Image 1 (tube, one colour):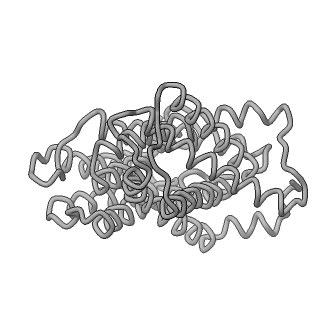
Image 2 (tube, rainbow, N blue to C red):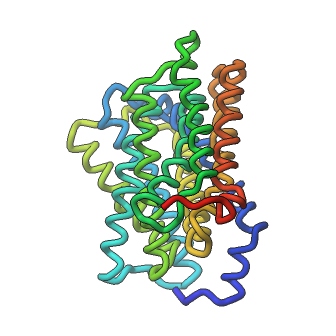
Length: 320
């Protein structure tokens, strides 16, 4: 695809564009956890069988990738084919952003509640910050950012240490631990995406990494005994929507990452657990309104605000 013009660069760096793009992405991501749990039932997925879970996830992401590539092909009026130099970024991003991240995420969703999955997703911005600052070194770690991480993680701990009834509290490695593992994979994917999209079209990369990661998950799931025991028209509609969640949300996010600092894009990610918690309560009829849960969500939001507020970008003391 052609190189972006100065006008398009200016458009994608506007605060209003970043806000709208993140609201769309986070709203879609927030609906993912309850949709996945409904999808398990519609497709007869045995959630105790990790390979069936991977097979189901692979179907979603392969479809999402094909959707993105269809849009790219229609806009360019040609079949979008990557060059040899673009194959390695596709494989790396497909491994981290799709295969590893969602292998963990789908296992976590199968072994936790939709509300808790949405809340634990709130660790994503903090983990992304730490990976960006301490491993990739593309941003500076400040006292304000550290304070935000402490506040945000305290919100997660509040739920993790809650042993109350209703499945709201508690922590398991195969449930909430997997959601955090998915957030870690996503953190690496964000930094890789920022680097790769400097030389490669964001939508082309998004589409092919979905197809690669999705096919890997489908092959592993099938070869190891994973099964989809039923397919209904309503399930196909749900799977199409889930494909749109990924294709639209990740497509928008990768474009924003191409033109903006990682921290500017993640400023609005606190919306994901908010959307997720309330959509899980609405769709799955889960208890999202206990006092401890509301306080926890507020701490997560406050922590992410501290991490990504204007003062954190350079007006606070930098740590060396």
